[in-house]
Image: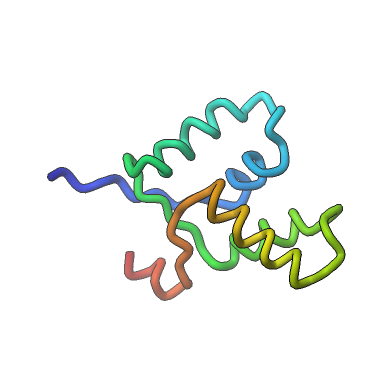
Length: 93
């Protein structure tokens, strides 16, 4: 079995998918994320990117911190499935 190509996914890819679905780059961005979702590519990001995306998405969302954290984690996992790694894990990957 051929090994899958591992790709690091930066915050802008997730922000485009989750916040700006009408952007002219959304089709290509969505096709890329679908390759990650389907397993054709092995997607990785850092916990720093997850926090950055969560912070950006926190604007204009529910005021409750608990609800915000739950919503962000579930929405991020469902819409952008990939591995979130620590800096040490990224260096070893």
